[in-house]
Image (cartoon, rainbow, N blue to C red; front, side):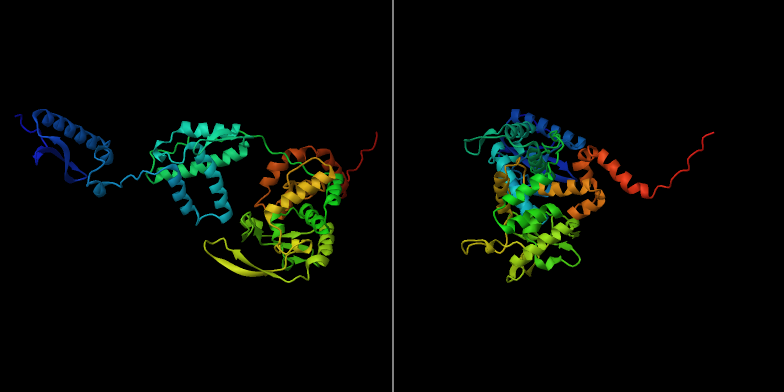
Length: 425
């Protein structure tokens, strides 16, 4: 029988090889009988392993996936499905983001991984799978989950890009922790989308909208939304304790999420003081008669810091109980209920439909038309700086150049010194 090649030996009638790895002598059983032919093959295998170790190309787990030595040299690669990977990632994200954001992540991931294949192994997903999922989202026709066909209007480019951002973070986490060999989303660029254009209400449309609101309280709600530019969640969470009608200010320090959680405003800059125009003060004075004397409600206020909360007593400015026909209403409007009141008023008013968020755009556009400083508008709306104002309203502002010139003629001429006229020779 042929001699044993270097590093090859008999072990209980079967062959095993030995080699140096990371300064340690290791032995691996090959599970093949000790024959002349197998000795030669074992010698060639060992020589290849030694070469790969020298060149840095050796993957211990790939070469010996069942080896007891794996725990000594490398972390064992755990195979997870896409669903399992998403669940693991979301558990970790929970301490980093708000419950509202977490709920949004879960909703979008349920859709995207349902198309990709929730039970497929995360390591088996390719960039092509992500591209196909993106296309099917845009078209609105795809097979979801266990063969269930979904047909309908395609998703917007903005929504699809957000889904892709979620998946990019998920696969980056998977790659960084060894669950997949690479981030298959990293090579894909966001889809191009049109710059959103504001569609503010005209003065006439605003008056018709307010007239079409079926209660005095809703008239006040949507009037204040336009006059202040507040987010709808901030209006739902607004308490009389936050308002100073003498100074004409609102201190925004609370927001209501889609999950009915009371939280700080969306961003740190969202905690702010709003200086009210006279029309907004009049609206609040009218609402004062309806809800100021109602008993305060006890709420749980979540902190930005994970796991922290506090109890507050709030007298809500807008309280659906004053018009409710039953006792089932809460002391505040939910964020989910607000769009319906807008849609109903828009329909009764017979004006062109806009999304409820246009109440905020209307405030910004009206303020710009009145000559307000963009930085002031940004601070009133809760933006960190005026960049958002310029990005969203830049083209709209350009269309009003003539009005701006008239404003300058009216205001700036008071400060510009008159030049002496040259006498005719």
